[in-house]
Image (tube, rainbow, N blue to C red; front, side, top):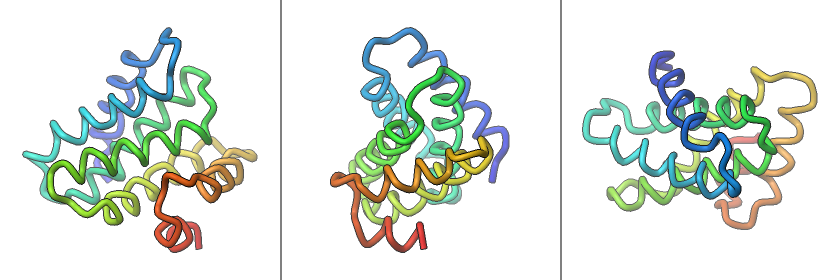
Length: 135
């Protein structure tokens, strides 16, 4: 995990979503932009996707967004951006799910369970990948 990437992503996402009316769309679009911009320089695409996802959920928590819904938007944005660069949507989803779970775990309390529940019920995410990552 690149702590600097997580922190940088968090700062960019907070700036992008703070004060917007549609936080989830702004979050998804910002994640897509971050993934697209990073991919050219990334040594490990999946590791980088996980770090971007973690930082993005950290940002959502900071601005008071619904963490479960934010987690789904982050995974959706990661998958969409990765697919546009020729990376498997399933691989991107797995990496992003890992990152959002790391972020939810850091928050503590019931957040991890809430995020897991929301991810499990998200029709837009690949069911088999979600089941694999959630265990």
